[in-house]
Image (cartoon, rainbow, N blue to C red; front, side, top):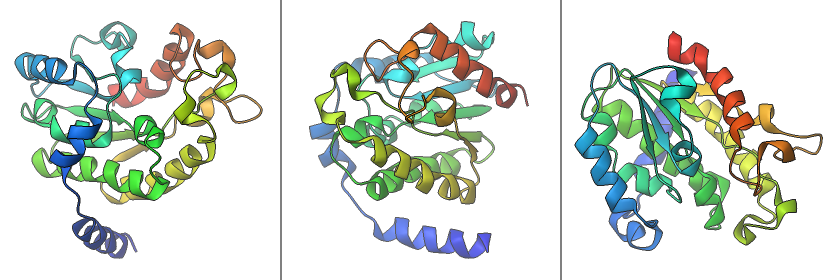
Length: 223
């Protein structure tokens, strides 16, 4: 069954074509070039644990959180799956031990469907697997949001898109040989939204949120 799923996924990814460069012209966030250049200059090696993603990754002091000098922060505020794919060489060229990937929230804000975002993310996952097959890849679910803060207008009404995206990503990531880590439920309140005590804007995390995240992934960092 897994082989059949992989074959179907491969065909679908092959026919699901898009211009990364063209999309990057529209989606490239501020300071993207600067931080991408920084990542390339810092590099990675076979012991590196790359935390790859958007502002949620950038906002974490991962060396301290994980108590691991090999943790590498490659997060960029506002980044999308297209952006991560474009700068992937900084993460993969050193053949790191592990890559922890989270992205999708900014893609959701661009009014894309859960299906389209899932395929974009899987394009990143499959490219990582192709470039550095020995690297262990961990795909983390997209975190919940809380629109009661009224901060991010483009995220209003997108709660279900995030839930649908996570449902799609789990079997796709697993079939591609990545490890799925469902962090989403650990951050939700009784209504399925991001808990108010973990955020100041409905999207980004306060220190207690990063502590929860750290506790979830530590066993995977250590394995």
